[in-house]
Image (cartoon, rainbow, N blue to C red; front, side, top):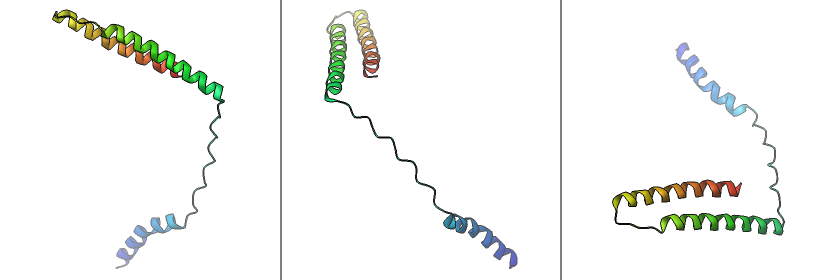
Amino acid sequence: MVRAFVGIVIAIAPGVVALLRPAAQAAAPAEIAPQHSEQQVADAKKAVCEAYDKAYAALAGSDGQSSTDPNVQLIIALNTRLATHVNSDYLRQALT
């Protein structure tokens, strides 16, 4: 009987301690995001649009080909895939 009581106390004790423990301190307020001028926003949009136009032109040039030869079709598909990969790297670099 005593063992059962001690077991119950041991099982309940961590919950009681957790309830009575003081709450964690609130985190420090997050830093305020920087505000950009309208000129900075316009310049950034222009740079991104120019990068997109270059990437689109490169992809359109590689994708605009066709052939009935299966080997050439494979080469065109590989070149298009490579152009897509390179364009994604270029756009990611332009956004940073």
